[in-house]
Image (cartoon, rainbow, N blue to C red):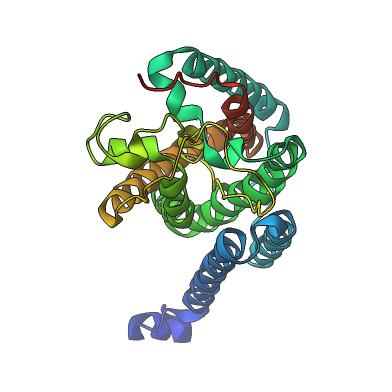
Length: 306
């Protein structure tokens, strides 16, 4: 008599209305997560293979779709990382300054200078380099990646599975997001391909013998460093002759290394997000990618081999 009719559904294992609501919320959260992954996958292909020059437009539209999806699923702006603005700017600004100092040291040291000379940056006109650094990177790359991975995916996963799962899954997906850019980087960055093959950058491989390498070897570790569309751009002046394409094995090594390194970077960015909102990782992200174009262009040329 004490249990009454309300006790019967619980004893029968149906879970009652509260369990039904929770199950519905779980299904809605899973649908939102699947939708977010689908939006990111479509934007990745468009930005890297279909229309790279339209990446700012594509990324802005995808970011809007992701935010609408997240808000409809019930995430607050705080859960999405739009918080701690001033603190995030301080943290991100300090880290951006550290990146600039590291890049400066990298191009000043002859042993590491070659890794900053990227054909994709060196072949650009000054106007196109400014477009990449000031528009393509901040809007076409960083906006979508930070809102998508550290904002929407992180928020959805943290709400349904907790913070550790949010960090692990969003960072793993962030690593896989860089498969297409890494394939392009392997072709544009002979020093990295030689390094992946276990050779010295100036070693026996024909493609590795050139001093050109990538400023994006650092920047692509935390961002989708797309190859710019430059059909009218001249070849990099420092390239002395035809370059051998990297082997499939070398490309696979570069891709694997990029996926692992960007996955680790994603986890570090999640830590910054927790301390300074999205502003902290976004500033570091912009500095790492955009400054790569600048330092690739100001890095001194290597002397020709004797």
